[in-house]
Length: 638
Image (cartoon, rainbow, N blue to C red):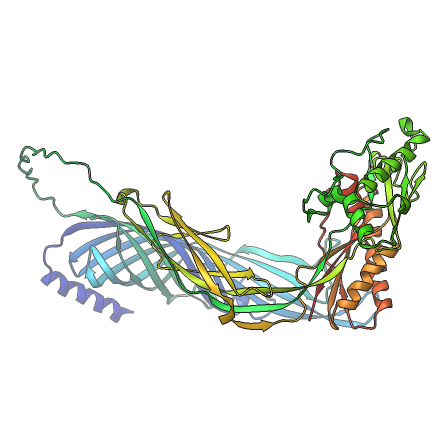
């Protein structure tokens, strides 16, 4: 240690003798950071601590901070002094085994416990140092080294001993009649704490200039202490600190300011406003690169609620129901598709001449609905619309019921709304074909889009360009060289070419072109049955988990078309008219009944699962609540 200090003093004296006048008088800095400390020793043997077994190694982290003063001896060397604080505490751990007897069984067991010693060691540090710029000068150090002795005055030196159960889980410490799995054994100040630690610190730093006189200085330091933190046993401390500092440079003297001569009077030159070319976008595309993928896709048709609902005490069919074949396409949304129910029933009869229709008119049976003629009148009005849609009158039978055969809960307003209806029963024909396989063909691939923005005022040049392909927008920076667009385009099995519309727009200017694809030149690949978009909704009667004949037909169709090894996900659902617990039980029962029936009708090896998805239709309408009495089936093919 003495030789180290003498060598530093000799270096400083030699440099001072040959030093030139420095460019700054003083440097001031504030530092703050984070430190990691390593500990070794025999803390379990120090005076006052409870010996729970040998504890020799530990580590810890904490905050550090300091204020510093730097005095340059020349542009290539200087002296410094830092005064600061450091949190150097650490955590020591070990595991102890205690033999115990189980109070219930009488057997002997070993309890494994973790013994933790948490130490607090806070110091006030004094660090004189030699500063050597390795790259740069004293006040502009790109890379510098600081080295010097460190004196750490101990402010706080305390400890806390803890013990916690690791295993078995049913073992406890008994403290004051309480069963605990962790406890504090002891906590106090160290009786033999040293008043000061002596050591050496080596640092490496770099100055990042914010201005001529202010810099940010990140610093990485290593502390090594020769002395022990305890006087009666060894407690060696080393540390690694990372800090960020702010440094102010105080110049040695300021040169005399000589004001510059006044500028000559300005020469005013009248300039015409610049004329720019009209903005335009040059749009370029590369050829489409990809393949034609063909195969079969499994689809489920939109579920049907085969009933017409009426307002209270009214037999008039509400305006939301479609009464003619006006060429409109049935909505893919099941709730909205209910508006086409009479058109869909008429189409079923047209495709199945042997079909028969039974119309069962009913009421809620309460208050102003207690009218014997009302259910028959409702059924007759539905019959009239079906006849106008082409259903033969001889194929329709009208029945009048006070309440429906399968009635909803008449004690609830929603249930009474559902009971004001005409049920449409289809005989000798399927209500709908639920599962169907469709052939698909699609072009999968990509092409590159490149654009250039020309003309216009350079100060108002847009920063982004929007590429629109098939009504899908992609926004990129105008400076981007090119953008790759990946597409999946339905083509049709017999189509030989497609045209992909591409549009680029920026700053109110646009350009468009088509990417023409010759499908005959693309490679073709056929895949197995695809079912990623398949989702069937199967309805149940109110408060029931029994499968109707229509649902059984759907499940048979599904089992026939799925390949061996498919995974079928079945999720049950219910409406909001029952209690939450009843609806949960009903949903689970519906899913279980469906799985059981599917297993009974096929010998194929299917895997059945359920999920946490809770998709539902709107409960604001009776048709929505009818649809929520369902199971949803999704399929994954191998």
